[in-house]
Image (cartoon, rainbow over all chains, first blue to last red; front, side):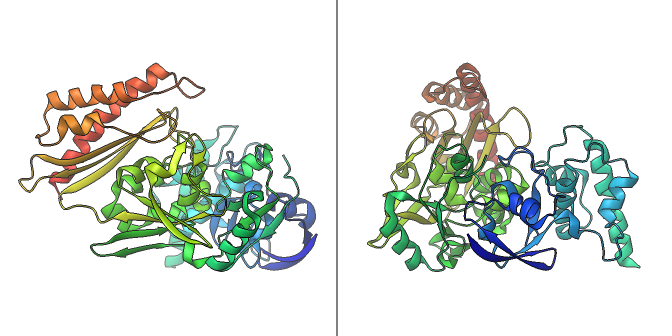
Length: 160
Length: 293
């Protein structure tokens, strides 16, 4: 075991880790942030998606020890300090894009990574950006609509 | 789905990395993107005692171009960086296309170009265009460096010429010839997150006249244990203008050269048929693109 510091949602946690510990397990079990989901454990389903330095990665095939000095963002860091949902989260609620909810944290983080780079993406760009996030409820249409609406909301918000 | 116990090293310089590999040898594995390695470790197909994480080594990162010499890509460069590089898109279009088709956004932001070659999956996306583009790999160790054409580096299904104290440090892509174009195509069962049933890359150079083919490389992926470089297609097409008859003949020749197997993703028969389809499609595409250069 080695004591390392992980920066998750701008908060630094001191956590004892073994080199073999996967980021998803450390986030869920040692830090206690259970919003990040563990689905397939093989990097296929995208449920465990978190952002590392703004880039979406699969925390089920990332070693926690390799994340020293990097900024990790999980779904818990999306809402503001007053608890107001991020526009992408709000759009998912408003458009019925959450069914069972298991894919939702990963979907929202993939969407955030897209909109941070490309504020007004086309539908095709949205679909490509979530192509590594599998929704077994198959609610893709509403998810794409929600991301599209959030993009408009965020862009017009910035104009004001 | 937990990993076994291992020791973890994160060298910050190439010398440190070579030193570790030299010392730990076959008991160590190099961790780049981890999208293949960690899966194989989870399945207990590999149980290295040591992991050497090379992502912190600047020498293994990035894309740089020198006019007339070509392009150097660090082995730990992420597939996403290659996908979004305007230089790669302009000069090595087939590689740009293949990088954009590998895995998902998440996988592309983790996986590396070196990892894709070292894993040496017969269905790898980037090895096919890299071979077509004439890429060389630089194998480095404490003892020095050696250079190998990628097609000689990959020996077969998950087999490479990598020595136990070596790592792949860089890829070198030659400057594309004037009036040349490359393109990539693939056939899979779905549009995203699929593993190619067949893929192919064509790199074509036209003569000064702009009509006749001067040089041509057609490489097939996922139809043999390693990227398969066609010998017959260039023999049919080089020195000629592209015509429907010749394309037909070349595509049939490529079919004959392919050595596909039947597996979970496609039957051998279907794969062979798709070699024909892709060869026709890509030969026209590359020929037309080269005329517009």
